[in-house]
Length: 247
Image 1 (tube, helix red, strand yellow):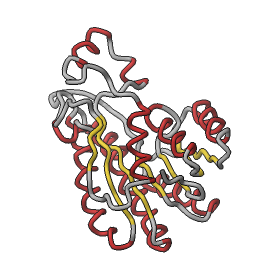
Image 2: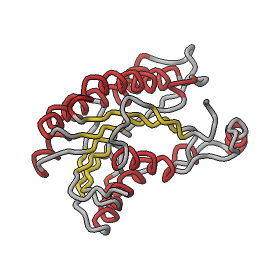
Image 3: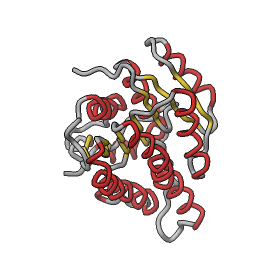
Image 4: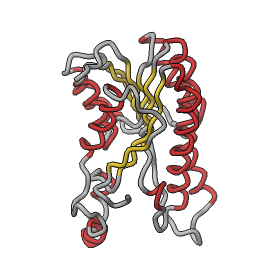
């Protein structure tokens, strides 16, 4: 297995949930890791300590990625401090679930700006860095909801479906420069967000999953690390890590 020693990784939304596990597994493979957080500094501080305990460099940047200047500024900060960016994992995302009859313009814009706008902003900023390096690995976290749709998630589905289309287009443009661009599409995953769902609803959700259980964040993280470390000839793809909920 290749290690990632000497590589610099950026993980958006890396202070908790799936992003935290991605950041830690990249660090365990030897990469220096920068994360962003929006408000909960204590969570970010805890992850930074865990990353540094593996013997690599760590950085936490407070940034609201729903605004493009902040998203671009985070990339610039990492590049200025560490001199390169080899791996970008766009994981940051939010939900504002409502049926179309109740969905507001603010609900729509907030989800699209955070989930899809941030991917555009970080990728557009990191692309020139990776072009100069003649090396880059971009992994965008989408969702099976972007493939299948889901009741009450028109905004979220649109943002995640947009990430899939964006990933394919950027992969075409960047391939000849030794830059790969792929997407990971998780299914229902055991995170803080899912833990807040009432037990009876959780039972209904898990009944939809052929494997009969929720995914674990570390299972998503392993797929990301595979693409970052081993996926040299994989680009423009979406890898479903969903227990069979969408095939």
